[in-house]
Length: 71
Image 1 (cartoon, one colour):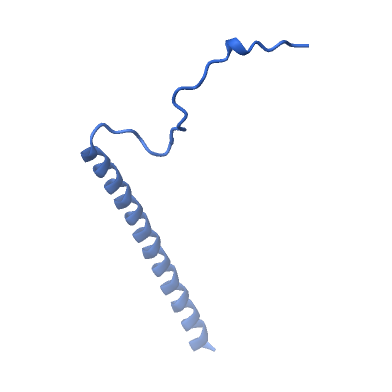
Image 2 (tube, one colour):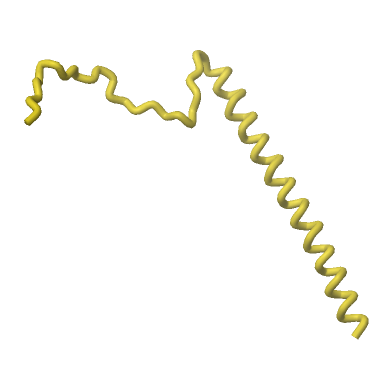
């Protein structure tokens, strides 16, 4: 059987778990720029999805209206 030597284990000094989703910055100005740009990208993506959804709904309404008017 393996013998475990407790003297070989080191205690962990910094027990906080780093968050990989948030980068480290030295000053607060950089953090504001990072998070504001992140929000702007999400807003642009949301607008693009909304725009394409409006286009698809309008095309569907035209096709459905044409079908109902032809009958």
